[in-house]
Image 1 (spheres, rainbow, N blue to C red):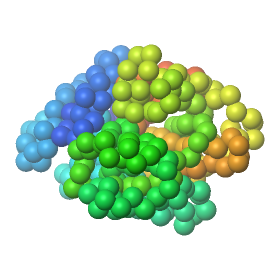
Image 2: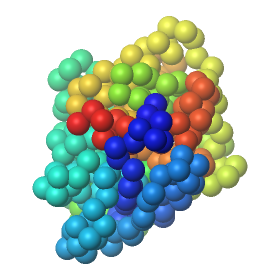
Image 3: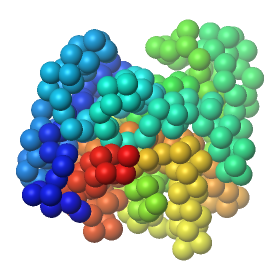
Length: 309
């Protein structure tokens, strides 16, 4: 870790908010980041991104930060657009670059990349909500989710025709991913570039991990380490590391899995290049579990952005 006196990159811009459905998560992540920056002694400012690129460009040019700490989740903050803008402005930024961000955010593209490289993904296809609702070409139960969403926003498990007919879904005219429902354990692993952290088992009393279950106290239990066999743990950690490399991630990522403990099959669902950093988020929790305090994790994220590029 770089000592304060040795830092070449001292002034940080915390980029927060955004115009995606994950805006509130981003604001909480940013608050956590800024507490760590205070502890680490950085000079920093924060910019609440509304989706207006011109305003962001003006802010970056006026403030001239040494590094942008990207706390955005979803939308243009995670799909490669902000990353491309920072490249044009020649400002170092945290997390993955343009290509990895865009591929990971597009569930169709990331599924294809995983399958091509030997990782097991659930059977599925992309379509449009209105078309699919009229003719659901998938055996119940199945899962529907936005092709380009995160934080389990608008994800639904559909168990029968009645459930399908009753959905008032906000992505009615958008492209969706339809996947077979994989029973079993919900597992997640954070990766710090070349190091997988630990396996967390997400236990949800309601039976479904939605947005509220992820970010509300008492709605889910994080079992860390997951109570799985050493063999399965090694497989999950190895697969998370492979996924990180397949997508071409830099810095932090988090991969989500389903493990069918009856068939003993592991399925990767998706990879997040901008994992949450809230008090309820998995990556900070896993880092703490393996002996990396949050401030040290933030220091590493900044150093990865500034010194390895």
